[in-house]
Length: 227
Image 1 (spheres, rainbow, N blue to C red):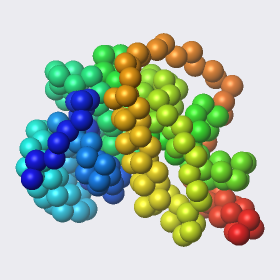
Image 2 (image 1 turned 90 degrees about the vertical axis):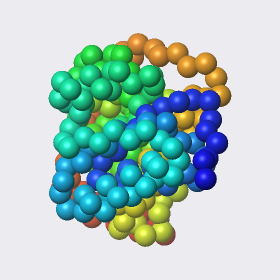
Image 3 (image 1 turned 60 degrees about the vertical axis):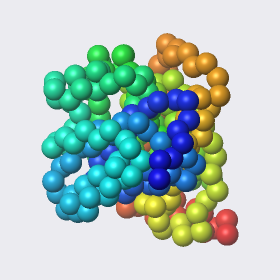
């Protein structure tokens, strides 16, 4: 069955992660599909399972699939492939810790990313915990990647309810809110003319990247006290 696509044509960079599976699941649910997939295969762990799923998905919905045997886009040949894509918007669902460093790619494409925190206040990789501790709330921001960490143009910020299974907050729940926020962001872009703006980076906001078990424990206990 060929699913009817919306007006906006976009690509997505996928990896062997549950987040990438979640993105495709929610795109299918809301009938918003990419017309191009760049698949980064690191050939580790369950790579065959992910590979099989991505290939079947692309064939079922007639999506162009570009298979790449690497865990990063920061290679000259891959950057060239991405720059040659006819799509201005590319969703990034790469491997954790793999930051896009190519200035040329960042400046020439709208690289969309969903971040589990309210930007610019909560930057970094562990913001979902610090946000709970500081505000008792959870947010997700979808924005355009820039040369500064979590410092690009914001497309959409939404607040999300605290999950019932609080200990899974940085697992399936994290994947879910990122995916939902991305779907809403794409719909927002589709609904009106999009203009890329120059963003002035404010350096006063702290980066939260410490993944110490104590931080997770404090965040969970802060939520449990509310219940």
